[in-house]
Amino acid sequence: MRVMVLHAHPVEESFNHALYDAVLETLRAKGHEVDPVDLYAEGFDPVMSREGRLNYHDVPDNVTPELKPYVDRLMAAEGLVIVHPVWNYGFPAILKGYFDRVFMPGVSFVLEGGDGPDKGRLKPNLKHIRKVAFVTSYGGDRFRTWIMGDPPRRMAKRWGWVTFGGWLPPTYLALYDMNNVSPDGLKAFIDKVKRVIGRF
Ligand SMILES: Cc1cc2nc3c(=O)[nH]c(=O)nc-3n(C[C@H](O)[C@H](O)[C@H](O)COP(=O)(O)O)c2cc1C
Image (cartoon, rainbow, N blue to C red; front, side, top):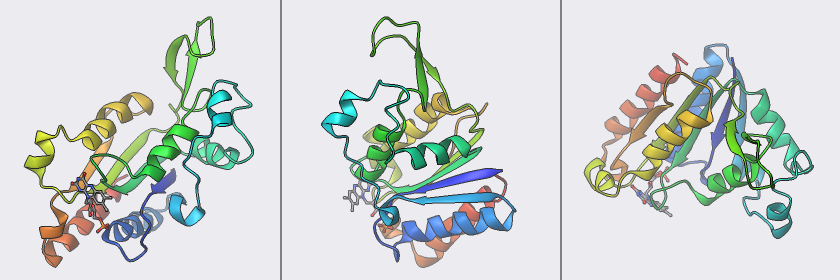
């Protein structure tokens, strides 16, 4: 399977980057064709400009030369793994900006039957991506995060389910309270990620 691995962490020596490396290594060992999209390393610009917003509905011109490689890579993927830390109960800005700028009309969805650029019924357009997994880490513990509604888990499982083509919701692999986890615990989570991603 062609698997795109999307990553958002600025520090190569970080635990989160180690998770990214584990995902890449595991998928390659299983014979998948892997496309690593390391947003920081590639210098992805997450900021939606005035022009970007004005052109947002202009299919296909909304896919500018700057965005085209990212759209092509997404459209070529059959599987997707997203590796990111939880920041302020959400995605790091660079990953949020990736979704804002790349997941646009004519790419991740189409609007059908409307009578204006912002109108119509939303139809998902990424049905070729059959398998999706999120791999993430939190500083907060599971209970405190649950009290807050755990937005990243909901985003992954609910938004992810309707956005992509799989029968089942995306796999969600999360390590909570990671700063209080022992080195053995951290390693055990990496091993779990390898085990689960190995069955991708
Ligand atoms: C800017 C920033 C915001 C954060 N916000 C949260 C948060 O809202 N909830 C949480 O559980 N952890 C939060 N954390 C902790 C990170 O999730 C945790 O440090 C990360 O998963 C660990 O990855 P790393 O050590 O590889 O950076 C935050 C960390 C940073 C740097």
